[in-house]
Length: 113
Image (tube, rainbow, N blue to C red):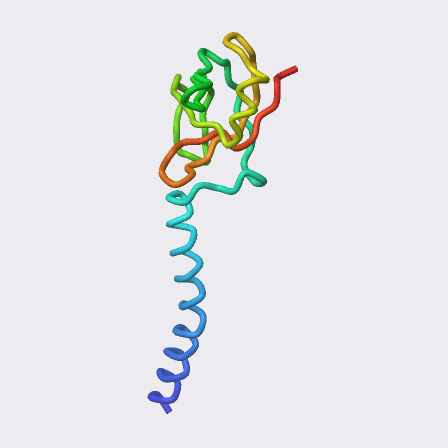
């Protein structure tokens, strides 16, 4: 009887721990993967420079939680080079940046109100 109880408890523990481990594993690696833009909050930024030739913009920004970054000033590639025609140094924006093929890229933005 004792062996049946031990076997049943072991089976029960294994059955319910595997999904738990899988969920923990996924959650543990979530910080390594950038969140999709649709689920990422927009950050506040101030345009410092626009480099149309390189397709890049320098932004002084608040924390980018999806990328695990604190506030700083840095250069980003832009998803759509035409966006560089809509902004200039001194503009305040709200934006989402993501890691696109190893390059930090502005994937969504709007002028701040």
